[in-house]
Length: 202
Image (tube, rainbow, N blue to C red; front, top):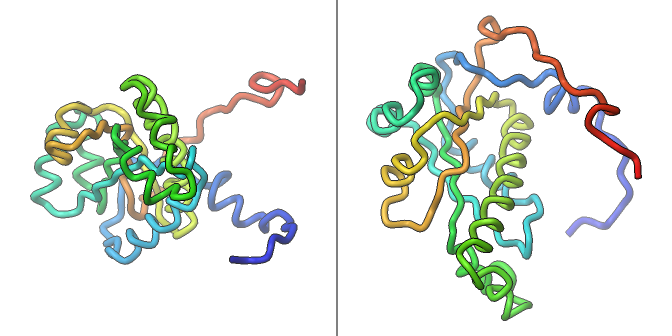
């Protein structure tokens, strides 16, 4: 473990790569994404905090033509071509029974599962919240590795879960295309809300 030292901000070019110059891509260059890079991406994404280290995110990286042929018809019409073209499409789901892994992930607290498994609604709320956190880490990790991202809604979530997580208690949170985006296809960046429109200092 590294010594706890106070660190300053990253150089500006890192912030540009992660935030200011990063875009949501819809068109992709014909460049492969190595499997080892996907393993590195996952290893980075799981390092972010979740409640009691519960890590509910479950992933399928759709790469092969056969898997794409199963996924593309389950996407909304406007998302089909971009999904077909992307080198990799990640399905980000959450495990509704994530608490079964807590003896492994949070071993110092034997009762940790009871914090989440008291009701299906409570478990689903925790799974959705924490997998959404992990989804954000996933996008930032991908960008830090030089990948472009195209996160999407617009799909038949139940059908995707049945097709790619059969007989698992998983629900799909969102889908994210990965690869090297074609910057020529980007539109101008849309507006953002200013600090005073979205924030308060209490």
